[in-house]
Length: 169
Image (cartoon, rainbow, N blue to C red; front, top):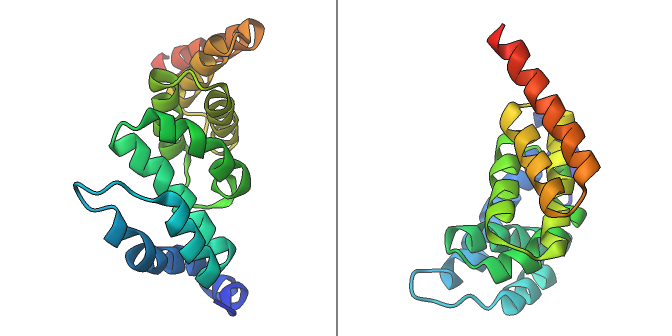
């Protein structure tokens, strides 16, 4: 845990964190998220944070986001998306444009939680800086529309249509 910066300087951005979070997930989360169990996210967070600090908190929050999607727990998803992405999700290499699009689209389709929708729009905007893929432009525009940001939605739609026209030429 103490040599993360050194490991990352040799192997690349977030490689140390990627491996550590996998190990933390195996020890602190997987045993408590098996089929038929109701995860106690607060207890997992407390345990992981006491042992691993912010990295423990990060992986518990991240796992809750993806667990919520996979188990169609849209209330849990709405509660967990914003804090996780605002504090951790935006900075990890493994949170790429394709993954962002999938998470943001799940938010668009399944929640009316304004914080989650705002976080999903923020995620989509962040992802578009990395990759202006058409699906992500479309997801971003739909999120803006659902949030009532009609003018930004219109601009996003126009950008999406221009991108499609360029691809078809």
